[in-house]
Image (cartoon, rainbow, N blue to C red; front, side, top):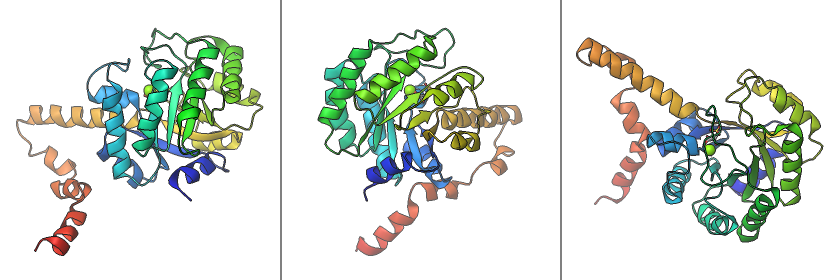
Length: 290
Ligand code: SPV
Ligand code: MG
């Protein structure tokens, strides 16, 4: 069974798979070590790591190369967040083979207009493309993928755009009709109500994908009980953890006038060297450096 076949089956299994966001190979490696099932190749995290807005500012090549580097580092599936597909169906038709060749297992494509605005920003510019246009983008993705187990996950932003339950349901059904392998339903309400209403109304066997950033009170256990969700994505917790840790350490060093206090609280240099793959390098040296 290939990694992609395994991941496809996992989305239809008894318990949802758990994906953690990553913005580089090191964060992806830490997520795998922590026991996550998959890596979310988050556009938000990558944009944040370049200190630019998550608004179609980074080019596809920057995201693609990061996905390739992440997929080369971990042995769990990578889900690439391709935003709007970088344009129309023509852009999608060029993007999909490139991501497939980068060894990712799935892409998530959202039904917003290009250039996009990030979903969780208050008063963001949330405009959706026509349903038929997005169906065409899904169809283009399916037509060009080489491995049938490379999943095309369609994401509707109808709730994010304030267009309501009926529109979200209509769009999700239309995207399944176009051939989507799973549906990501996104919400930025601070209670899970509209997501629970959507899940209750979902009468299709296509798995759902949730990103519970805005409604963290909905636990993995509670989501699993609902039965229709195949994948939970923790969308930005790697970059937020990194930012918080750096802020704390940097300000303490300024306050202390030196590194003598923070040193004890940080991972050792040896731990970082180990994460860099030192053991592998040593074994190569041992075998081949003559
Ligand atoms: C991302 O992580 O880039 C996402 C999820 O798309 S969210 O930021 O919640 O829209
Ligand atoms: Mg994104």
